[in-house]
Length: 393
Image 1: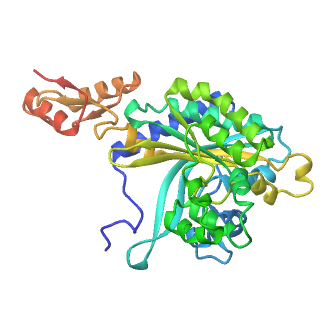
Image 2: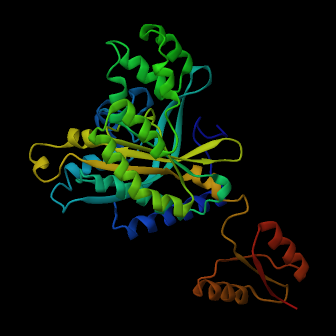
Image 3: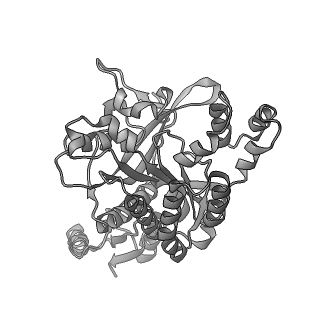
């Protein structure tokens, strides 16, 4: 009999489960304040839905053995977008939806063996609103949710912003055949590959200079205007940044603009976001998202487009990465231990236990009597209980 979980799966202890629950409840409270309603997309979908129009590589999907081509969801956005374009197409717009739950991805581990990676995601989707205001709302909501998590200054939260259209505009002047390799090298920060492409551009250093085009939004926007001119996309992006900067500054979140940034999944065709914090050893990405109008359009029918424009923005938090940052190993539910001496009947201890429960106080029972209070205190300490009620002399 196997004594270990499957490769990529994990057993969570009670404190980890409690930490995840508190984070999910905290985020849900923020989403509700902003008018978002909870949905529960299925864990199992058709592979066509999960692939999100080619945005997610087939090898990353966890496939199921079934008569139909089915798999486990690798993220929540595609399932929610599908439901919005079908079952919720007649709902008032815009649709403000949130969900959380397990997601599953297939990874290649050591020696080429496949591993299933499971994690908990919590996030929102704003559908049917193509305007700039939706991008602003999404970022302000992301910042509000971040402010509720209990991050500390040493976590140095940084919101990395990019835009699919910016990268496209920067690569457009390149000769035919260089666009895609340059894009791959830039988005993966592959300096060696860029150096190999430079001779085809006359060793101008143009591609390598794009790697340095990141930092404070206003400074980067000025450099982009010098390169691209005063294009409408830059004006809109500048307006978005102006509208979210006060909230970011108030929460101690640094904003950075990086035109070459693209998320892992190729779902997005507009604004893209990633929230990064400093962990104990390395930076940790705790949230990501962006605009995915084309994905909504893929799930739409001509009839549904009459009521639901092909427009969507959203983000998702990695709940367990957040827990690693904000939850101590000592965090968890602190219960009261109800213990009794040999002369106290079990019935008395049970009545006291349930009396505490009726007051909303978490409490647990020490079933066997202990010889004295000190023995009960030792048990309470061993079990990590916050308090002791001793029923005895």
